[in-house]
Length: 204
Image 1 (cartoon, rainbow, N blue to C red):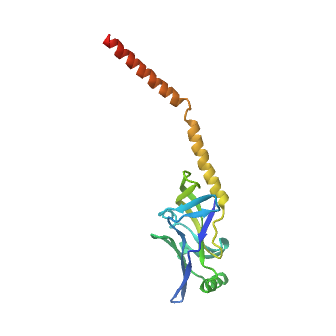
Image 2 (tube, rainbow, N blue to C red; image 1 turned 120 degrees about the vertical axis):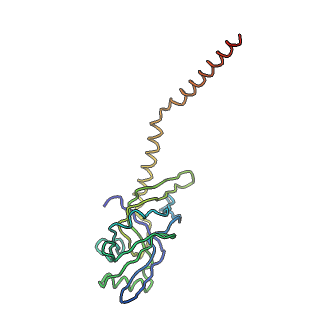
């Protein structure tokens, strides 16, 4: 997949066991919290950013490794929902080597973060301050992960997104005829002069 970004944080993940079912619960993302992305920009995720994608086919992974699947939405072993805080994940842990190891590591506190892999489909940039601010309004969500080192990586993709936004803004400015404003002002002055001449003539 191309243009996939990964974000995460030490938001915490906990274990819940009931009726022999083991479930990890945690937030892969939170809304309206500013995060510094490598010193390049500040980023926020808007409420509703996941609303159009959590009903799709999303996997739960370990450390973003596509070969270490521990849950999936279409099988019901991964459940995703948005609440007032962010993207809530519930993963029913399988009785596999990866699943058992992950359960042990989370219980020990060795793994305490979650992350998610996504592609931005709608965003806004604001460069009025010292650092650009990116507001992510909608995404395609591909996976959520339990991770040992929640990191804001893949900054190159975001940097390209910022440059594309700058280029589009520049292109829109260039497509506006630079002579249009002076001509318009000149035409306005000419009309004013004509009106004044007519008024002067009418008073004679």
